[in-house]
Amino acid sequence: MSTATHWLFGDQLGPHFLTPGDPGPGPEAPVLMIEARSVLRRRRFHRAKAHLVLSAMRHRAAELGDRVTYVRAGTYREGLARAVGDAPVTVHHPTSRAALALLRTLPQVTVGPPRGFLVPPADFAAWADGHGGERLRQEDFYHWTRRGHDLLMDGDRPAGGQWNLDHDNRRPPPRGAATLGVPEPYRPREDEIDEQVRHDLDRWERDGEVSFVGRDGPRRFPATRAEALRALKRFVTHRLAGFGPYEDAMLAADPVMSHSLLSSSLNLGLLDPAECVERAEAAWRAGEAPLNSVEGFVRQIAGWREYVWQLYWYFGEEYRGSNALRHTAPLPEWWNELDPEGVRARCLATVLAQVRDTGWTHHIPRLMILGSHALQRGWDPRAVTDWFHRCFVDGYDWVMLPNVVGMSQYADGGRMTTKPYTSGGAYVNRMSDLCGACAYDPGRRVGEGACPYTAGYWAFMDRHRRRLEHNPRTGRAVRGLDRLTDLEELRRQERARGDGPP
Image (cartoon, rainbow, N blue to C red; front, side, top):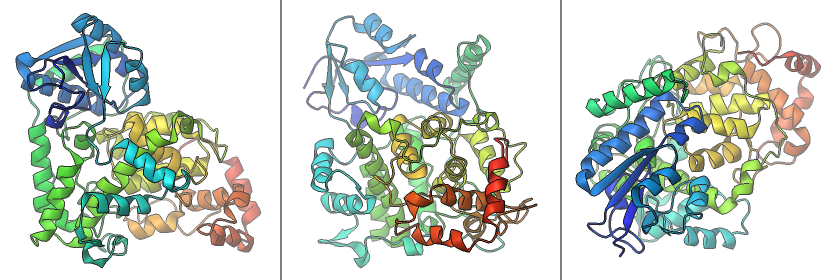
């Protein structure tokens, strides 16, 4: 146990980052936090995200009181030198490769193992190496994690006899319903710290130091451990039971549905994943939530979130340059500015407005509206990854790199997923109420009123026919191209499409 100063990054804000470890902080070790302006200068972040991160950091510093030295500096290196000079410092493994590279240049810093995740990296590496290191499937990892952590298990069998209850969790929204009608999620109240954060962001932006996209306020996501615990309790008590069946559905007037809104709290380190899945399992065992909803929630955290974190480190920095489909088109200005005003496709306009206004939307709009459009248009996957990183309150490099490069844009050619995740308008029409009042017809792929997603889907399949025709999950769709009597018209139509909003 070290008596050195312990450095907390801005996504290491929960109590589990200050419990003793080796190396790690002693019970009374001084704490250092650095608010580095360079982070906000580096990217054009969503304003609500910048507000949330700074609010969470400053709230944590206020809680720690005299124990913490809180430094505002141009860079981390500058802040560290000002606060401790060459004195020894401990820190838990950071969540980005850039931060780890910085730490390795600082001889007085000792880096301990990561916290805030379920599986030690060495254990994952051994598991992945045992599977050949390629085509590592989330489902296999999920089973392994549940066994190892005794999550939703009855002895050596999965609770209920099945690992995967997706067949109960993919219902379209209730017909004719504008909302699910479930209790509202927890909403925090802003305080004087939020007021000061907003004042500082206004001043920095006015002075030209930083620039943001999107709208800020009022704050929608927890910035303290206490707020995050209240959000978790409200979800488990009032919203978890209805989560599963409609977790893939979309409603224009109900963007939150029954989702937990806990991702930003987990990614700030305010919540630990173990406590989230254990509370959900306890609710099922107490008869307070059905198994399919609990399994769906556990899968999101112990399955997908954990899997993405592990792949970020396992695949290495070269993964960032993956571009198996050779997509190089730049992101258009209306997309970068989160401007839905000229977008006629109702699904895309609705979701883009949600991102503009809140910095959040749930996983299906991210994957099947935003990501699918980017994939169909052939946009550069590095630029798409950066956009998701900047524009979502829960977006971090480790989160978005595998999610976007691997799953959303299929840029790794199948190392992570078995197929590209894209669809025509029929899927959106089935899983949402977004098509009814749209200017486009989800059943049309060419001509006036043709749905840009339906046309884009078939054009994507046509462009990548050679790669996808032998894939068991896309081969049938590729063969369907030969039955399209309007394929040449579709090709001309899509070649003529510019980068303006659909």
